[in-house]
Image (cartoon, rainbow, N blue to C red; front, side, top):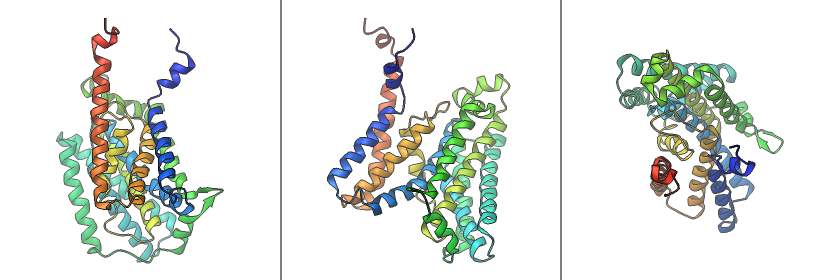
Length: 326
């Protein structure tokens, strides 16, 4: 039976998230007069520019049923290499960006290849790579940031296209690119097929090694871009960039509807979830909450989301409920 327009709208997976985000904006605007100030909106949009890329970086690996614990470490390593090229070697911004992107791709590809070749859990491999990349980061910098970034970088970051910050176009382009790759290319469909059922995917002729490397390579590229955008945002290349990305990288895809065992992710849901996460953090700060409690609330939100999704999936699979309780 053909569904009505109303039924199709109600079945949109990310619609409840959109409503939640709207309610969050409404509540925060009522409880804090500073929420809708131009400065606060400026802060929110710039946090979104980095967090959305971090979330997409984790999401593409979740799609194949794995995880990338080295997302922040890759972003941090690329950030300080990007800063070093700009400050020490006076490389042009576009060339430094391409070099940073190449390093991120290489880091992701290496992680993916090690997972596929050794058949060791991605959790273990990326945990090890987190330590490797972080060690390189601090070894190169000796924990000293690169401060002297070109004025052109900050000017580019602060520029607008109409009322929209130019920097937001990077995550928007990344979002569209990831959506196209996952849902409109053979490679993306193979990633989702591997996440849904690796054994069946392999029987269907899908190379699990190639697909694993591809997912982690894409993840590394997105993490690298996030690291370089973070440098533009801060105006310095700090060794600590990426050190606090891990929780947010999982929070947004999970809240957005991703299944951690793979096979299903929602690009739009993830992006809306990024907004919810940023609104939560911003609201807590405006309310005067100790910033050290923010991970507590974020972790609680992830836990509640996982429990809700588990309950919802169990309810959907219940034969009794499918028969309407008869």
